[in-house]
Image 1: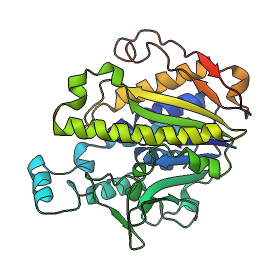
Image 2 (image 1 turned 180 degrees about the vertical axis):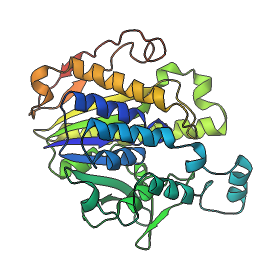
Image 3 (image 1 turned 90 degrees about the horizontal axis):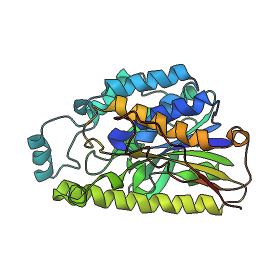
Image 4 (image 1 turned 90 degrees about the vertical axis):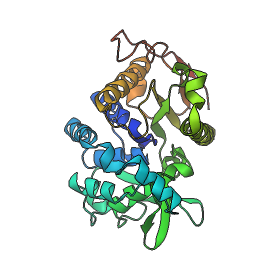
Length: 319
């Protein structure tokens, strides 16, 4: 059983749209889709129809979103919310309205929107600090699951579902591979968004409060992701394709203006990965864990310069 696992990534999430297109062009299709945070949005739209046409519709959603839809108000308003003891810097009710405008009804359940695949969305149950997997119950409401999965502290307040507060699923793990494993996946394509730190100078990484916070969160998420990758490596008879969508010179977390660049970057990196993948492995279930090195040169010479993308060199390890 094949699973696509889509990580969180905030405003970088549109890179997964290009990755999904590259996978479908090679006729690689999922039986299970798991999404976290920004990846949950991509997963929920993609699950409505596993087709290139639906990928195009998902790309249009990302083209439509603006900073005002996700993080409404000026910086002074965010400061006022902080000083007045609000739960977050921004209100997420406008984002709730945006998702409805993009076709997600508050009444829709997982049984309604995922006719071809099994869809799962992760969020963190705040009181117990444990992961909840929406979709195990087909009557779970998709819009509530999305709002819970994307409620990133301190940007957005917890989202209340059935009287209980939930925050971003990345608080537990931004790449929930174990969710797919526990539900029977024996082959996983992980669309793993990350910033390419090699393309940033040290002063850029830690400059100011925002820079320190961003670097700290990135470190925490990286360690959580490595934990899930280790669990997947230890699982028997499971293949994990860890497709790293490394974003050089990323936009600010509140900047959604680089959608086209990110879609193309995600497409190019996934295409390079699949080009290096032996043909006989692309559409068959494997009995061993497969690792791939990052393609040298993809991120330094990629989208902006249009130089050729080099394929990654495979490294295969036994069970």
